[in-house]
Image 1 (cartoon, rainbow, N blue to C red):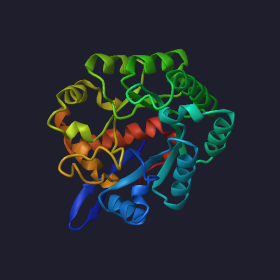
Image 2: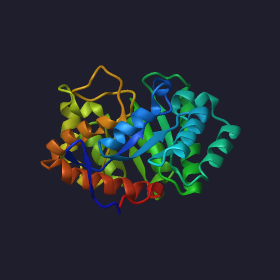
Image 3: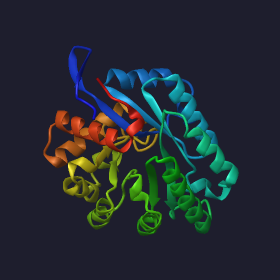
Image 4: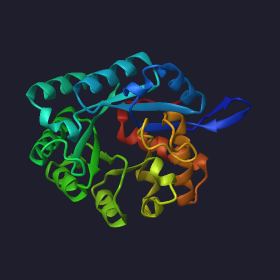
Length: 274
């Protein structure tokens, strides 16, 4: 388990947090990545998980994780690129996952909103990468948009609960959240939980057991209030944590301890924060 400690920055104390889903491999950080990571560290973000979404971005995530001690990686092929998923891609993902800083297979799943890849390709790539995660004994980072019931069915049929899973950037209602929780999975909360229009998501945060909550930025996307409209970055995961803590009736300190421990449970390769 992680233990809570405090970091003195700029004359005030802050708690340790983990951003469990970031895209530092996005071109939007090409000019100032070291500064972005340093700002996060100064704000108490002790671990950042950089998520791959195709083979090149997975390789880049691994490069960033190798360069920066606080960054870890996931590797996988997103449903948008499922039409390009093949045996060669699977082999490359498997090789990358042998590195100790790769903590999960992801971001994988289904996206029936954009349908950038045919649905049959999405379903096949998702199922095969779940099988790969089970072979590697790594947890799964699942993407689901307008495909919640189908995604959960694939996970159920593939026995994904053997390795664990987080529904990244959760977008369902309380009823679907209960199905996810009944599978033993985690729910990832992002910037939208800070938005005024997110009543359903706030209710999910209220009903979700604290030991199943993860906090994320999905940066550079989904910037939380009060920075909505600007480029997102891991520093802002604090605002997600504050919003979830408010829904749970917890202090930020309490939620930081809980979600940091949750991160350690699901992503066992993250290591320990002293």
